[in-house]
Amino acid sequence: MSLDINSMSLKELKDLQGQVAKAIASFEDRKKKAALVELEEKARELGFSLAELTGASVARKRAPASAKYANPANPADTWSGRGRKPRWFAEALAAGKSAGDLAV
Image (cartoon, rainbow, N blue to C red):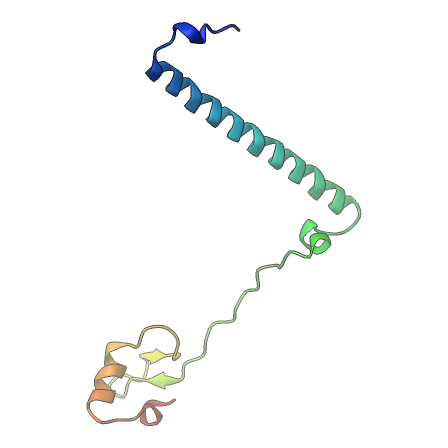
């Protein structure tokens, strides 16, 4: 494949440059994925996971948060104390109740 780049316009050259950059990036990604698959297979053959061998942290699953506060009007409506305060909790605080009054 031979291109006569001297006869190309600036727009054609910039398009070609973009295509080359994309081809290089995808080539590197494909090589990295192939290497990762090969390393994972070798680690599995030896009885390990790749994350164990590299010391990469494994995502830990959190247990669901237990309810700490309950809505006095509807005890089934609870809040763990994490995240945004529910409207009923904020309204109860504004009405003069304390968080201890709403505790489960």
